[in-house]
Length: 251
Image 1: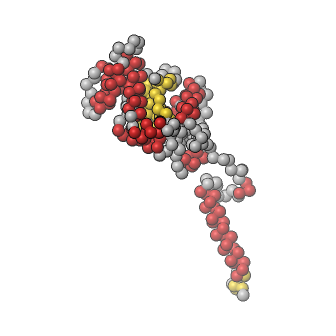
Image 2: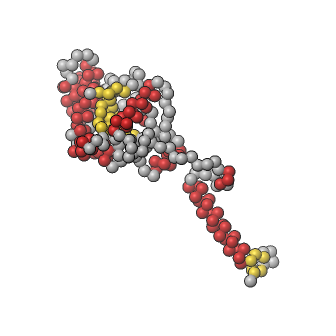
Image 3: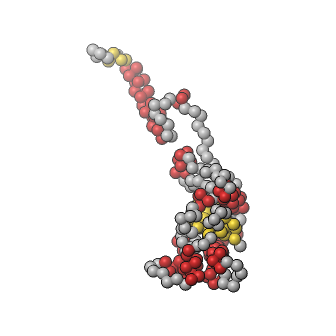
């Protein structure tokens, strides 16, 4: 039986085919849209899909030593003005939106001149970053880094202090500070005390000693120490030179 109309004469079978095609087209269009492909382009016009960007190595393959080397290599590129700016594309954005698997964690100073992803030449999803003035390991920072290593699989934690740190300098001078700024100074005081009798630049020595104190504090975490003992994590200190951009290992 056919459907009669003064202007339309379509068989039932043809109508069903049309309906199925329309539904299929709708599904196809939705799928294409979800993959950021313009709806007006046909599949035949689209170039072959590129494989998603990969981290430096698969999480199950990367070792703490390899992860540390990735950081140092990235910093070397930054210093030599040879940055690759990896993992900063829209495809990487879409990839890590589904989940993160950072290969390294950074406990850095909140100083605006030391942005971790830039100075280590990394991108989206590569680094798990905690930043606080004086790069101190507070309870909140330790808990965050425990999560980054135990749950997300970060293989190395680098405590990054830097040249001419204002928080360390204030601690050396015994500055009287308002509000809760004093809590930062208390956390830095031990490093300053340890560096008092060292030869050389007093501020640089204190900055480096403070880095090592925070490394010790992190290693005292039962969660992190267990990962270290299992060979799944490394915790190191790094000193950033504001004038050159170079990160040097401390300790």
